[in-house]
Length: 150
Image 1 (cartoon, rainbow, N blue to C red):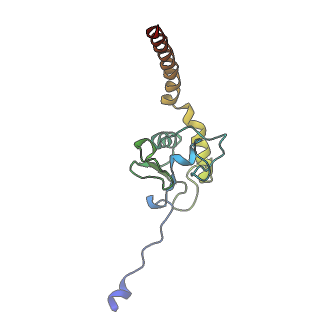
Image 2: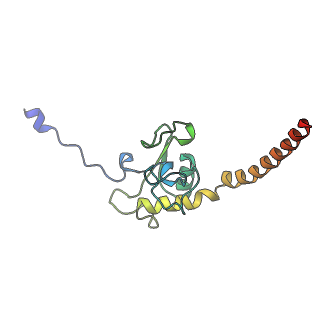
Image 3: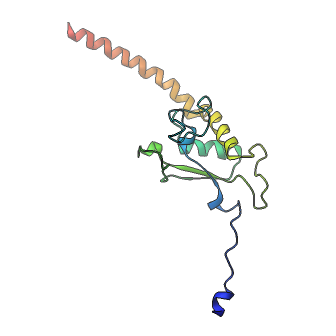
């Protein structure tokens, strides 16, 4: 009995513990999802198929303490593809309870900022330019098929 009394309870978790970091899944920001499927921001501000890596890039660029958990899955996500995997955790508050960055008072403010910045990422802007070229190539192959039918 004396041994049990000597043991002190574990200290309460602080906002600086990684277990207490805020989570963002890509589904929260996906404009292809409904609210029932997990979207947490207005569809007008959501992004098409964001990835956890893109979310991490935006969060780290703005100065948040962030880390990526690649093999985590959102529970409402039925698709098990690698594209839909991942969870980003970031620190919203410091040990004393004050905000890490004043511009982000809540998790929703971070989600809205990330959704606004993802389309401006370099890989996103390059993909849109590459998509036009593939459409032009596709049209050329359709013409070739038409000639073979004659």
